Image (cartoon, rainbow, N blue to C red; front, side):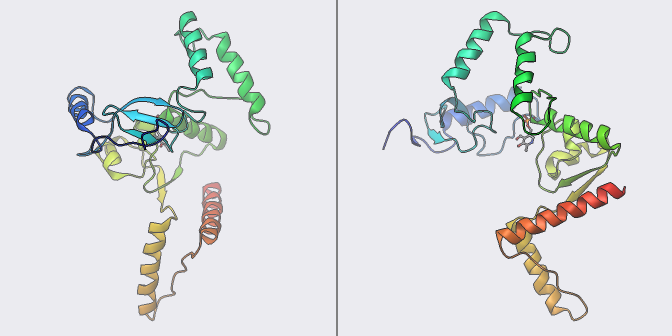
Length: 239
Ligand SMILES: Cc1ncc(COP(=O)(O)O)c(C=O)c1O
């Protein structure tokens, strides 16, 4: 089937153009921006609705909505028309120095549609900036500089997010610059469940230890996660 709405592979993935562009990027882009590996990444060329086409003409169904940025569809005609109209008017308004009416109107709409009494918005340009702002907000609200984070978690590569990133290969090269104010917890997923079960078997083999309990179903996993978060809340409140 070669219907444009569906996935269709014309070359191995990544294809030859993706591999060639990877070489170009590796040569000219600062390290620490795009994650590069022997067969990663695939370079995107265009996207419409939920379909993405790469530079080799391979088509994929985008189940990520591009980190949620395209959650009403790639190149959505309404969004595209609004961007084009704004681009003919004013592209850059000097952000926090000379704001624009369209920005104030957007914030007003966001205040109207967000749940509860949430009224204030921080417009971030990316994920790392949002995480840093969340940390600053939490600090101002609580006065506490410590953060709990999960091992394996990815939060971006800026200095303020490396503090809370749970992936050693991104964190370790900058360890001397980090504030060591983050406590890392294991994320309760299938992998930690398997580890727990093997530790449980080991505990059973030892007469002097109390076997640990492992969750057996998604419901138990969620209940366990909720308990762990409540415990973490108590720990955070007591510091
Ligand atoms: C959960 C999460 N937080 C933060 C980020 C960082 O986003 P950005 O690359 O826009 O800084 C990402 C990016 O993949 C992410 O997945």
